[in-house]
Length: 288
Image (cartoon, rainbow, N blue to C red; front, side):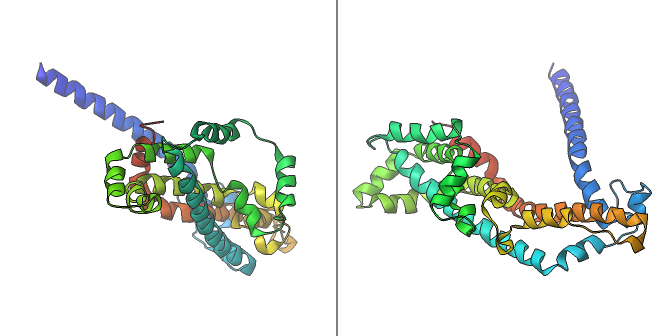
């Protein structure tokens, strides 16, 4: 009987493993194709030889991208902006979630309901624009930070994580004369590292990939993020008539290189946060 179960278990694992391998290959194929196009020559792309392996390797697209000083500046600016945005967002999220996790906070349910309502009711683009304008944030870096500085969804996860911390730890700290702020810094935050890392990834990805707020609120090219700069590069690619018909594929090269460049920072950061990802989400969902 045990041999039958063992055999069926092996068959099941083999089938599941095969399915996951197929899904992984399907997921990676578009990414590999984009990378290959960014590294292939124009003639190879024109002849349809490029699939998932670069043909006639060239760095022309990357040279044209990084040869643009405005692009390099926007790339570095986006990294700094994303880091600052993530830090401010996590500070806001923690400072809001911690008191809301305390059962003795008066009006906790009402405050939490107000946060949750923002997830269901969006005022729309024009009211948001007028709101940002009334604060004087138009064409400033604050327009890219303050409006999205707190996510109700992330707040709920962070609050649930704090609620899941054993109350006896807080009681012991209070007996030793620890204030609420010290309890937050020395007990809650160290125990909440998985949740903090996970939510930091959420905030960082949303800021790095964000472009709509740049279109709405930013007029100065010096405040353009890398996503906006890449969009402009693709939209304004001009083809020289002297290069013939093949030059029409320069735009495809730059598009592919732009995609690779834009996703590289998040791909570098994700492996360092991945070990916290599942743990942070699951522990934050234990209690509501």
